[in-house]
Image (cartoon, rainbow, N blue to C red; front, top):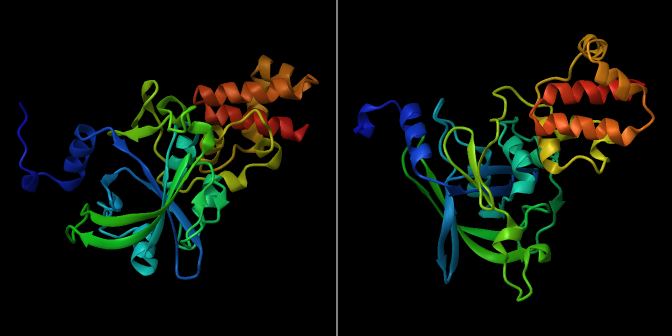
Length: 293
């Protein structure tokens, strides 16, 4: 058996062992606002329910392992003492992953991830409309667990209002665990879907993804693509060039046939299939070639 003394192991390596062995962990998609009222939304898997009376949720925005800096969510929670915790289901997991991209201060991750801001009733931060359950919370306390990279900060949140989508309720008015379809976090790229088991989500780029806001309207307005598809398309550093698109079309009999056909729906659905196969660049090439016709 491998035996580890945490004090003798580099923090990044220890971080990986801990995340891979303690799970699955529920995901808090936490929305806050900064001093200028700009919304921020980011996911945290160091999260759980700790009390019913009073209703208390706790999540932990850790100090970054690589450079010991703190996250915008923690800064905003310290400033305003308010947060909305949105739960994450399978239909929004790719967008949730994209929202974890470290965009610059003042950038609205709601826009970059393609989430819809829903006004809260008793706190300033907006809710994530796509989330099946949303908790408007007052921050009762923040407990720093250390001052080094990887140290957690326990944000103790008291639930003031809870919003539940009626679409996930059963006939008795209770939450149906099949309908809510929650996802949870494990180690590396692994997630767990409560209805089906393990699946992978590619981590966001270390460089910045273009974001859902940069996706052309004809794609965003199509009923073919899901929120998860938007998350994948937004998590590319740059769009393929005209030369790359032309080379792709020239070398693909299928692409030529699709682009010369009159069935627009068929073209979009083929791009959707590429996304389902995680061939995101190929999907982009087909979609952009279509847009040039």
